[in-house]
Length: 418
Image 1 (cartoon, rainbow, N blue to C red):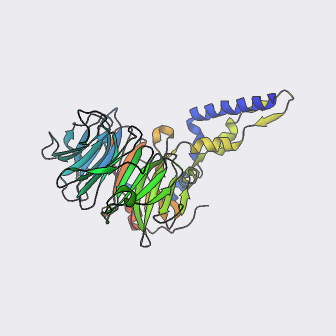
Image 2 (cartoon, one colour):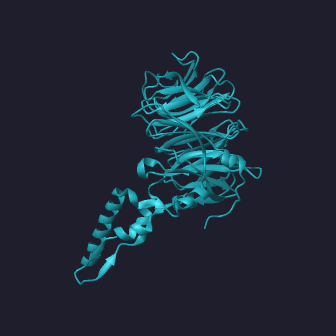
Image 3 (cartoon, rainbow, N blue to C red):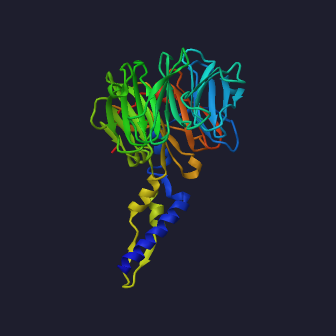
């Protein structure tokens, strides 16, 4: 028992040393192999939007020379335009008094922007007259600010007739609230389908009556909003057995599917009618695919030799180092691309400078694209599959603009990474 205690103390000491050692995270293969596997994206430029502030959310309009909305950690939202490889500031929106949880441009008018906040409001702005929001959507059932529900996410139907917002847990209930966009009235809500904070709501891209929601309770709920009550509207529940961070609708082989990023950096792919995910890509799988593991040679050099009272020498297992390396892997977002999914994944080592793109098609993963010029831990991204423009923003307040021509113009053979 005493011997085991000494060995355990040695391993705990190692964990601390690995945590503080930036060199323990490196590539599985050499730099030439990395360059071959991850074709470098076309880097256009970067712009420091705000020093000492995080970029939490990035979104843009779909045309060439888009308007760009950038939600910052000080509860403001800056509006910029991209033209001739330059970023110009248009205005700053400052009427939210709590964290902005998402922002979205109207698909019908590139001058109209939605912002949602934990302050319990979704605001619609005309960026040409930005002093005040054009419309303010709130929970009108509360009086004098009492029991205001904190919004955690929102989405708009594809025809822009219905707005829904998810809330944190409030007095034992988590709510989905619905507004009629034309009358601006609160229509009602659902509050029996989730038992913890709602983290995501996503309308189907074409079926305006179909909605999914995800929660810390681990459930993905599928609703038919044409039904008259919550019990009838809830048509399916998928149990991820993990806290949900992000959801995505995507179509593969003519079928509706759901992508789910968990708070433990796993990625699950579900068929809407499936009882379990048809593909579960673990954090370890992601680390392997982006070729980020502990450098085993350096790990061997760092391994402590623990001497017990009877003179037996033992080294801490290599698996300890590999596990610590995986713990630094994160997922930024999953994007619909040209007949495949583009997953942005990175490592938190070295200020998060390493971020890479993974291609997923037919449930199989492979390396796709690299971002050598990245200098920050990326918090948000936006991708236009028609123009192949990718925007990334992160913890150093930098907006990066990329053109993913390498993915668009090359055919990547789909194979399983062993």
